[in-house]
Image (cartoon, rainbow, N blue to C red; front, side, top):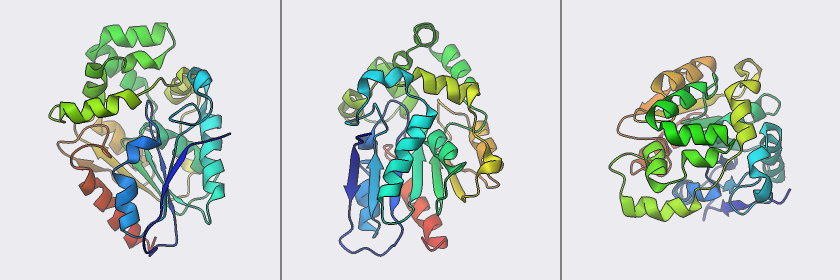
Length: 261
């Protein structure tokens, strides 16, 4: 599979372990535009992939029916191409993909940002149905998750804080894209994460103003991996793009440093 990978190399490499960033639903490797140079400045070799059907990777025409196994294979393909096993840093749906990847692969560590929780996305769908019933019903009836974010107003409401600058958001919106309905089914109930199979230490980061996944779900995910969620006030779902993204990145740096990674 031909996959888009955006890489940044540090001027001085001070960490032997590379970082691999995995995006969430409706996004691509582009969404790590803040994190990639920042972590490279801190001496890390960093890479972000676009899963099949996303960004400039192959498979765009079949996006609605790509599944978990394919996305896990994409992560494995890029991880195996690196000099050593990378730390995996993943957002939203990417967090789900990484959880499934770690059920059968090793990694030095993993970081989940506003990840699909271990209990799946049924709670998310119910919240969306209450908040935006017309677009949610359209997405479910037409088997097409695009309708969750099919207007700028919908996408901003779900992904960003209310005070996030409109002009900056409108620069991002053209990159928001269709997503897999099969993945939604698998993440809802067909292929839920199995934390008992994961031995990799995980850092779980959540946002208190996330309208996609609740604080309770983020805390439950952390408990499932025998840790505690770190929650950020005044921050919404797209933590890596929100105005406070540096505080999130710095927490990851401290956590990696404590593990000599």
